[in-house]
Length: 598
Ligand code: GDP
Image (cartoon, rainbow, N blue to C red):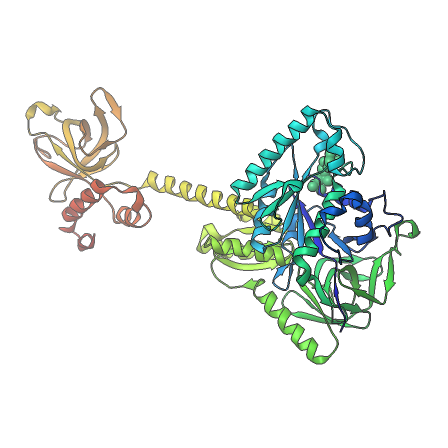
């Protein structure tokens, strides 16, 4: 078998509008030296920069390399505007061998920047930072496609200083997240320090250094990972499943290992099975200037060697899952092994537990795995996790959960759409749907909602529940302000609390009357607590007949009150409430044994 080092697969990620698309466009158009050096090759879902192009672009920067470069080139995944590619998997690791994290130097860290760093850290994906939009710095002199180290020399003192300040702010942010970062030309040890390349994606400034560094770092640190058996059966990851005019359902795949041949059988992940199918055609994009009829946008090829982006047309791909593995097989045995491997991978992510838990949907297997993991770490149970848009069935399933446990009766969707009929049912039945493209933000939104709901419920309960209270009338007749209609007496709250509206009972359990109002000094109040000396008006009681100075009275409680207090409002009770509850229970127990257990 021939061994060879393949192109590293590079993902560009970062916050929306920080310049991912612009950078990829720039790389695609890397014009300067591209012509003589073999240019750029467009793959399906990816762009390849051959190493000669990188070398030509590097010019004098070649000394940044330190050592021979054996890589054939760099393969950039073209991110179509979303972050899910970060969590694309290959053999349990990340599909991206290396990543470029792009940060708008004027905006600094934003939510998706942080999310990207978290995912890179979790997947242990090495990355370098592109600090973008340096041309926006006041007075910056732009020279297209110039290396940063050349361009910086042309800037006046103030612009240079401003860049320095912004870089330091960025370095500070990385430090807070546990990374030592530095401008790339000041990095001593690339295994310990994160390299920041200041660039202008719009004008191509710094892009030469970015490419050189990516190549150098891949060569130096990823060589073992990039060594492949060229002739071995191919392995890849599905980027996207899509309908193509005249081709039916096709899959866009990044091949990261081996060779894929036109007559290979492939095994790919489907919704609840492994799909085994024969390739009908391997397709790569036709050069733009050769497309005359949009129906014939692709060229057929007989084989493709890793790393490459390719479109596969084959029967039975309708149910294929984005993010799932693709494994080529050339014998029955290999088919069986591939099926097993793929099934076990899918079954660990696409789950239907029947548990009381949330419904989770995501756009790819990788992002679904990342989201589920995150939920697991937060002890949020999952009933169903699946790839695809949010459907009516998902909402109905959440509705059935809602009946058992409202806080889990929700659908969480990452990078997916909500089908129209799903939205209708959700609105009609009050099933909350949370969608977003930042995992931690999505979970935060859900958690905030749960908290809000719990507080709402508690407020509702508190409105309807009676708290225990024990009071004593002052023994002195002077504190009887009025004998009846209503009786007004001075009391002290011995334990617990009282509110207007509660019914009072005597030591023997007999009802006395209802507290109409509470006056503390000169003010009417809504509550009096242990230790408070207040005057209360009692409707329905006459002093001397029903109540007497010096007597102890209790707030009457229902069984329902006790159950609510003990179960759902436990945290609202303090020591004195508990004492009052015990004292009241003793009184009530004379008539009903239920209270003996309180
Ligand atoms: P994405 O959402 O990360 O793909 O960001 P885009 O590449 O779409 O860029 C967002 C906006 O920023 C666009 O209007 C770009 O033209 C602009 N932009 C990107 N890079 C640069 C840059 O280096 N300099 C300037 N001035 N604008 C840029």
